[in-house]
Amino acid sequence: MPAPHLFVAIPAMDEYDHLPLTLQDLKDQVDVPSFDTYICVNQPDDYWQQPEKRSLCERNMQTLRFLYEEVQHSESGKQNGAAGSFHVLDNASPGKGWQGRKRGVGWARKTLFDTIMQVAGADDLIVSLDADTRVPVDYLHAVTEAMVLHPEWPALSVPYYHPLTGNDAQDRAILRYELYMRNYALNLFKIGSPYSFTALGSAIVMRVGALRKIGGITPVQSGEDFYLLQKFRKMALIGNYCNTTVYPSSRLSDRVLFGTGPALIKGTHGDWESYPVYHHSLFESIAETYRRLPQLYREDVETDFLLFLQKQFNEKHIWDKIRQNVTDFRHFELAFHQKADGLRILQYLRLKHRELPMSAEKSLIENMVQWIPEKIPSWLKTEAVFDDFTTEQMDKIRNLLFEIENECRRNNFSM
Image (cartoon, rainbow, N blue to C red; front, side, top):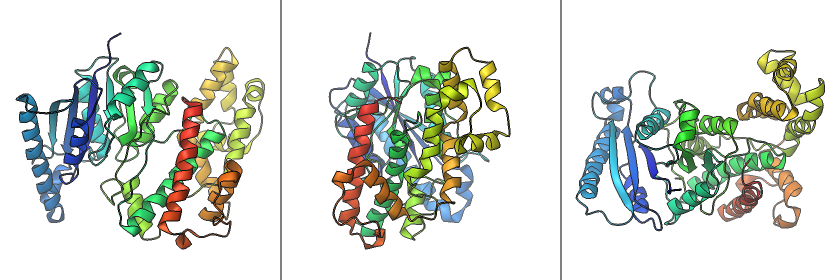
């Protein structure tokens, strides 16, 4: 079976200062055949009429000029390293930007993926990156190897790690944001949720054929990566581990409605309300529901999570309908998880979190006591406050969670 061809897909808006570094990382790749890089420079077209956006527009034009030079180099054979052809999609020049509600990184990724699907084979791979993401020299080799070894995976969620910047306020914000993300993922791993993955647009690899089967990416303005992985997971098991790490940017940015950039902006002002650290007890009803699925297949049962789902779907006999349409428990279980998906889990947790008056610090520490009591530092007390920690101490907590999460990713491998 021939090795899949790789297509690297990179959306870029206001990335003139960062994209060259990412492209250099791609040029430095080792042990990988030639690959194609598609870059979509994009912005809403009405930015050209907004004085406060004019500098962003001009930087996008700089990016385009830089990329067209890269195209010339690749076509003339002057390009060194493994990087193959460059393909530039101009959705930024006057008259070519996004119109109306069709805007945001979701549309940029859709444009990239749709363009690649026109030329790629079903077994080829799309490597989704961001224009300010850094990758090690073996990145493309490692993700390709993982996908070849596991042909059953439609997609792969790659382990991630945000590098620190040296700016203390910014570093503390990215560390706090990672604590939120890793705590959430670990709780899902611990209860055996099928949706225990972290969705980062810069850390996803997918098969072209699988992307076609799910109808491509849904171009929401933000959170498109979450919905994409959820669609893949409803199709089949997805990969959660490979022998490499991607390094997303730790910069502050308001280019999307939510995600890392907006979280850091809020966090530097002390606003973490949208990024709570969920206590492990909030996941217990979900875990109980999973355990009682064989009983639910036979008869109605009552758990807090099931009552929530009935209210969400406004269907009292929701499970009766599923029972009548399946022939065995396995298909019932699959149908249940189609309903009780990652979005419903998140909605349930948000609701229950408001009913639990507990600080983020106490939640995290009690979770760690539950998971790794033997590894908790002596200075990490239940009455601790994040503001009292040094940046180095917060980084140590992050690294502990990173280690545990990677162990969960390896042990579960695919969820």
